[in-house]
Amino acid sequence: MGTIGGGSGVKVGSKQFSEQRVLGSLAYETLSENTDLEISDETGLGGTTQNFEALRSEEIDLYWEYTGTAWLTLPPQHDDPIADPDEIHTEVKQEFEAEHGVTVLEYAPLDNTYVLTANPDWHEETGVDSLSELAAHVNDGNTDLDQVMNAEFSERDDGWSGLVEHYDFDDDAVDDLAANTSTVDDEVVYQVVGEGEADIGMGFNTDPRILQFDLHVFEDDEDFFPAYNAAPLVREELLEESPEIEDVLNELSPLLDTDTIREMNNEVANEDRNPQNVASEFLEDEGLI
Image (cartoon, rainbow, N blue to C red; front, side, top):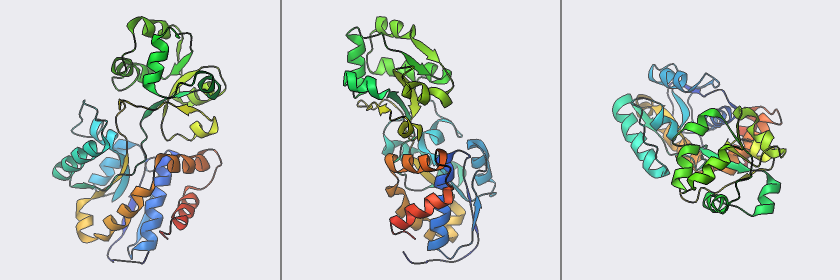
């Protein structure tokens, strides 16, 4: 890809966890190589609110946000989760451009939504692949399985309490499951399930520990969980000055599916690799730099 455009500097922010540092590095590297703009690395800036406020106050110019987070957490905040990725992207894009002067670029296929995971031996033994199959399995009386989840997931409408209603778990089965459900920090859920101390646990779809512990991810075959696709948020004023930013980032986003980002996350989080090196290798392999 050739170098295009010209103009002033662009500050790329991100949140502090591995995936966000990878996404920020991908934006930084591809913009550095494919535009004449001066690109500044502000990745690892802080949490959701800090990045969004920095964007609105022009302390940074862009960062990657999840559509579900933008819809449910950032102002004006909605309380109706949306599972369809196109629908939520359209809603967020229209709202942010109208209210915040922020453009939401094309979203990546990667979806960092909630998931339920299973111990690989349990999955092989039962053959239960999807959440609807899990509901049928439990409703048939197989409630002697151990579950782990964090406190927030157990109570959220877009977590366990909503899931059992959406997938028609029997009330008696849910009560029986509750007796074998433990609340733990989400940092240890994956290990507990992977080592067989529990059969099933909550998780986040792009977390590299799913790979580390070879966990099965139940298919959300009735589209319960909200969409959390990553999309670059960019100051609208900057795009008016430097429209090439949109072209470059929109070429990148479609390449980032869940398996791809999970593998890059794994390299950073579990193999202690530098996010910029991981990002550069991916971009080189894809012919973007």
